[in-house]
Image (cartoon, rainbow, N blue to C red):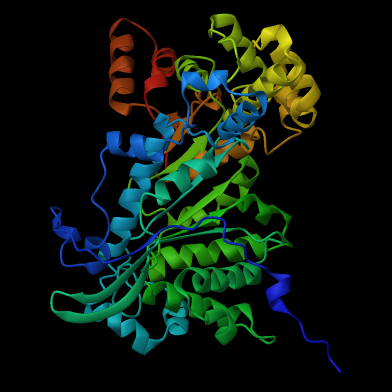
Length: 500
């Protein structure tokens, strides 16, 4: 007798991010393309940066008087630092992209449009198989307005936190009942965040999708469609149907670097499916991963970039400069030691050396150091350079080899850890193949600027060449001088890739 496979056990889904659910409240839209679309009108207002910064920050419950509390209570209060989120420019950038991505993706997916209704009659298996015509329309006559982008970077730098903080500004589920005196009973799934399955398989992703939708909507799609004989070819059209039916605003896939462990051709198949979701079905897709995923995404997924101006985002560790100073100054306010330690340049420098600008490591180091100061009474509960170094060596041993590689600033040793630092040839190809602007944040930015393949402020570049030639320089020398000037002054600008 053949053994029955328990798919629920094999691919067990645990919701990692759960948003709020609310009834639809339709808001009048200023932007013409957003009007008369219940999926867009039910969303919160477009948020200004100040509102975003206030609402994505996560701060400890802190008061100076808490320093006088008992030791054990203060140890518990320090634990709050582990959840600390200080809004940085990159957080605002992520929220802006998601805000545009979700709304613009809904433009072609108005549930009352005849083309949207036609999709259900045609069937999503045929819709996916048919792809799009020369005008970019699928078989139902819908031209997708969706796009996709990727966020890549070093582990611990807050990629996932930046995305999750932005997603939570939106309800996850919106319940519709009537729209403009029309019956409209629908549960809208504004966003869904999944982790790439541990085995990197497309089937695992399908299973997680059904389980996640059931978890958030109270449906029974998993038990209805997933069985022992369910193949990926059967499940994918059903996923597309469900995503369309419930108006999925954006699908976020985290830990995409897991695809690199798949068998030959598997990664390309999954990325092809994401491209189909974007280009054919119209569901925006955001991929999050470490630098290890860069090689995977520089090929197939680039087909899904639809020149909407979102672009990809590369998040590296913070540079030891203004942004680091701001971050550490804000973090340093939360001290529960009996004696307050004033932050100085030396402490800033040591914190950077011990964390190498990786936000997660810096936060954990600061939390552990306060615990150590209180439990051992070090320097009458003061945070010192020697305390920080001792905590890093004793309690953060697992990350020390990686930090030493970063500290040595030796590119050859960095290549041994592709999650930590991208290989330059892969990074170059990634930037070249990208047809949109790629924002580079953090330490890697200055290193990327060495590359002449990057087009920086083209008009200024040409003017500089012209000026150099007018002063008598040969053309090749003029180009070299212009490039050096641009690269030297580029730090305030995003980078834009050549599509050539």
